[in-house]
Image (tube, rainbow, N blue to C red):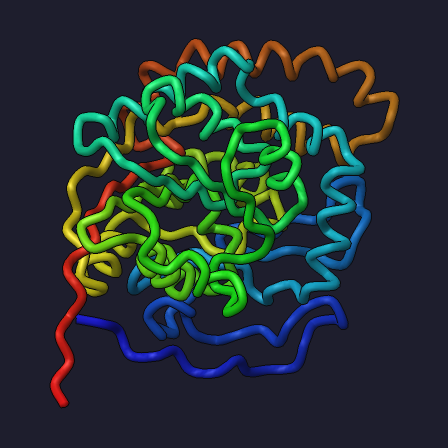
Length: 332
């Protein structure tokens, strides 16, 4: 059953870079909130602190108060001005990324052989480039809010490039009911309105098409263990962290059938090394030089422990594959 709409934002803004703090959950409207983490900008650049709160009723975690568009842009600059931004781009080796993408493609191959596929938040379209090895006759398109997707089109990684957000009324009509598969990898957590993003993704699918989602898991015990130094909490880009049960319930409410869920293979081995990098980003320069080599040691430990951790509640991500239902008939 769909939840009742949340109440409006309340309270004065903490500073010009934040929206007013809300006193209810943006997912279910519950008012029993608890603070999970407070993160300061890397090297203390950028506006204020970034708090992550969680609803005690449904488990949804979200940035509160949420950064405005200007505040989010400034926090992006602070993030990439620190070496943590560099770390985020090299969590996995190119070979490991390729193997991960191939595994995802083979998972879809067991369910369907699509003619058309849209990758949302595709960036440089490395996933479509790799998945084409499994689906040589599939037409891959990419959508991304940055011009990177146009560069990917010129490089031949995607056939069509769409710049913007999936919910943009100038973008979505061109994509309506065009695709057999829509993939959304670690993108939904960046959306200001995850429900609207899900509806838009389903709109781009043909009836019976597959929606493939990967997200950080807010139930990961690393979130409790590392607190504000857990990477999904430490980045300003993550506006919402959705529990698996909430996402599945929402997809079913929108007429989908859940075909598969997976908390093991989507795990990304970065938790300890990212926490150390986040700590060093706020440390004095001499300490960063002395302790910097420890990040490589922590990364090696992340990878060594990954086969065990992905089988436990320390797994930090999950995957959902859902099939879009037939459109509902409307009465006159």
